[in-house]
Image (tube, rainbow, N blue to C red; front, side, top):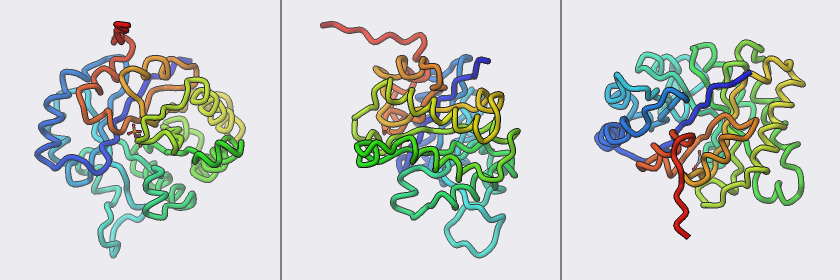
Length: 257
Ligand code: PGA
């Protein structure tokens, strides 16, 4: 089966509400495509103006995090119903920065994934190894464990709609992009893992992104791999380059050398 590509920008903690509107207005014509889903995952405070600014375009607005409770005494957190009411359709769950700086465990990731599905928000579930893990040869074991726990008690219908982002931590924000072969190998292993837990049909439906220093120059080769269904893009999603990444299939890098 052919899976529809999904290219998401992760703005991280960048852009004030007014900057967000300006950036969306700049990028809107550049990311127009019928060939892929395009998602901008913006800071929580930017969501409402971003949804407004993206109206009438192909851009969907996503959140970068969400709490796993419905409401109540959880100071500083954002509830799933707040996101849906504001027009959010995607949420990044378990980004490595949240795991590293905010103590998110695989168990928390699982609770958030379950809650996102309950509210019909598509989770973009992040996984990926550290440099030490890669050097020790435990990448695939580690990523499989992250995936198995993230999707505990998630039904096959739900998993089929999920997006998984494979982001090797050593490639995030470092300019060090994984080789196409490294990215494809782990994305294929993730699909195999889903097939083992669920079945082949479910595994074929799941969309798996690569993330980590994706640029306009590397997107086309990465996204044309068998098991790579698009990307989760940090730094380059804040620039006009994001238009070239989204239109990777028609954009050509000219080599003047
Ligand atoms: P990067 O970030 O593209 O800046 O490496 C990717 C991410 O963290 O999602």
